[in-house]
Amino acid sequence: MIGLIKGLKTTLKAFFTRPVTVMYPYHKMEVAPRGQGLIRLRMKELGDRPVYKCSACGICAKNCPQQCITVKKKEDEKQPEIYKVNYSMCIFCRICIDTCPFDALEQTQEYEWVGETRDYFIRDKEALAMAEVFPEAIEENVKEEEV
Ligand code: SF4
Ligand code: SF4
Image (cartoon, rainbow, N blue to C red):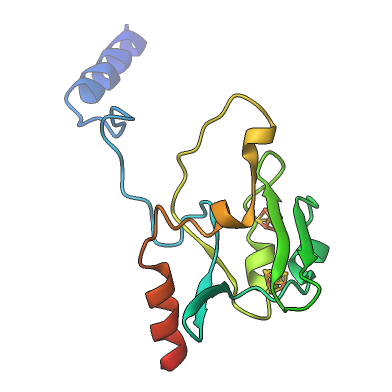
């Protein structure tokens, strides 16, 4: 009998407590500033043209525990010809970001991304710049460099 009363007490308490869940995707919770979402390849301005901050040194690829980064340098320029991240293997550990000597990568709080094939989760350098999500990206980085 005591067990039954205890159980009912717990049920009643839960009934009058505000739920902690939200009706995703209609309602979304704010992601913490240090939330580890998709990786962004940062840009800067060189002269009057936007370029990647990445010099294609390959350090991030060497340190990635999942080996999901592919980098190939342009022959005549310190810029990536190929820079790809295979998100189907990425564990969002941010080692690539922390080991980059050029501050060329950034962790975003973007986490929504669904697809039906494995190939869909391979992001190239254009997609990694995330210009559609961060249209102000270039100006932001120029300001940072001036400081
Ligand atoms: S992101 Fe950084 S570590 Fe990786 S290749 Fe570019 S400059 Fe090198
Ligand atoms: S977050 Fe970790 S697993 Fe993902 S690409 Fe960077 S180093 Fe590799």
